[in-house]
Length: 393
Figure (cartoon, rainbow, N blue to C red):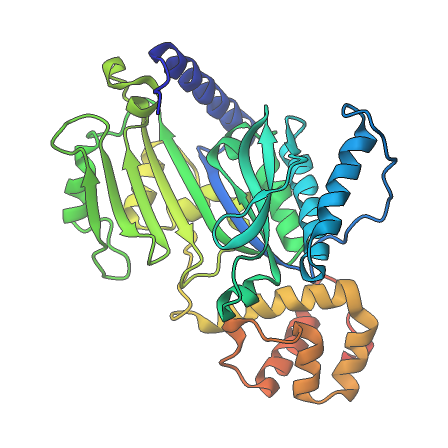
């Protein structure tokens, strides 16, 4: 693969730095969201638009482009056709929320991460995200995945999206009862980390990176080389990993001897429930990751209120409450009359089948129907997503 010229590296690096600095001025926060992935159940996803495009033989005409998209959709098997339309609608909505520089590609692509198909999201004709749908196989796990649509936004999308994009995406996730599966929170130290990147290893061995009395895994890249170094604390498998690396070397080349260090906290949904508030208050969740994260963030001059992202095992009741709330929100928005009747007339199992679909989400399967129905009732009485159901009065 041909490497970009040094001049190109410097130009791109300066563009990224200027963009990050502008975002800081707009948000007032030093921490920004640098990657986002979330999954939507097809029952909650936007419906396929019903308009019929005007056919045209002119390849530059909008009607021709739309007609080709609909031909692609209609050529799919019945089980994937609606999901394709829903994914296209969701990709359009995400691109709109990201800003005017973003658009969904008219060309349906091959899927990633076990999804059969994807709609690429483009900026300047370069893919910076995608929306996937359809199962890549008939295995039980992939069959379950077929009932979902997945959005993956790369760092380039998060960096160059219009200001306020993360709050808009948070609102969309709430509206669609989406599950955030990955959220990266980045702190850029343009003038370097106090004590240098070597300090990370010292702080680690001093126990400042410990969480709950546990010493996390650590590994490094290029440590003996002395440039382009990275330190990883935690692991993707555990759903929480921090990468401290010399960002300036990556963007400008080692010869520039840039001091720029990035601290990138990567949260996954393994063992954790990722709140949409991470998109609204990234500094709070960054500072709540450990004493070390809080110290580095405070040294950078950020004001924040540390917020922990608990594991499922530690706070199982909060996990199930969050899942119940998402399902309850969907219930009120799309089937409030039916739900009101269900509380009053249906048995426990029939009620849950109505509210959560044919299969309960995995996080709820360990609870019995009576407990879950009671949780729905309790959440409904406290919820502000809609007027209380008559049957609960």
